[in-house]
Image (cartoon, rainbow, N blue to C red; front, side, top):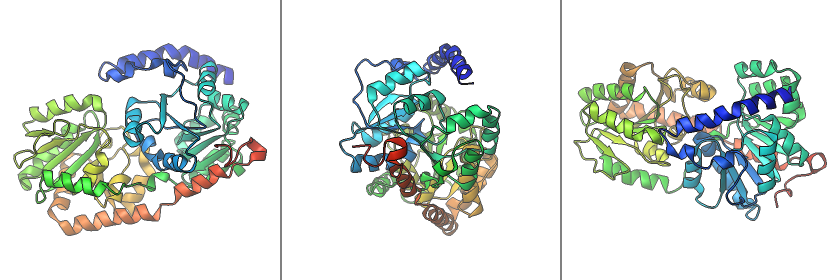
Length: 431
């Protein structure tokens, strides 16, 4: 089975490169640094004892406190973070500038992985969420590099798919030195697929350990004064293709009922900023753009958040939020940044990427599920028109976040508790 997997991946490699070229039509950054994905480097990467893989923006955001811990506790070790997407790379740069090293994720073929591992020389690998790469795990095992699957989640549907691969799945999972599962159900599924029971521990979801810089509220206050202290403001965060039309329709209904309301519209992908700006203007809304430092007077009805890394500030400065990717079948995005800021949250029907978090938030009265532009407008009208209700829902979100924190500390204990006798590592491996 391992040979078949490798053969299929070799056959798929030209199509993976073509996909990068296709995506570069709208985002030219996708045509850059292809060599890194093949384990080829113009300049040899600086060596790093700790390798963290975080696919894109969400995983980078979740890994932020983990990365900060390693930087603080092992300042001489060096941290390398790989991402699959340019937006993940950009988010990493905005958080850490040059203190963290970055290359794009190498394809999971043994020669490519060997070149990457030889160039970087990690002593520990931490893979965020559910990235399971058989050839990477084999290459790390041969080099004595322990691999930890952190913040791991595995849906029942995904588990059924892995089960069809039979013993290959169990063989692959047994190569993880440790698996920190988000929930007991996730842990049970990993064990059922063949992961050694003693290496699987429920650590919780580190996305609840939201890190909010002390300067965030100061920046949010400055921004809110720019938008207008008295006017109602709602944020549509991480929106996708086909979703902005519904958001703008909801905003039109809101303006008919609550004149002066400002929509802060933040598309998920930067390559769509120009198209979304054009859409807003075609729909007849007065537009201000963050990137252009446009004034945001009372005549402006839509503020386009067309910059990277500022979404937490936008959310903290708003009165209510809609989290995108959920009115279209993308699967939704993380609600917790808004909840931690005490901002009431609405989501659409498609939230399978964050199913457990969303269900918990809705069940606890910290979020509301909407179905279309009409119900979205109704929800926002209720919150923006009633400060008491808005505050109650927002405070409930804060309570849910606080009640589920602590996963980061449990994950760190799992990582630093890896036995040197079993894996040749431990807390001393990094230094």
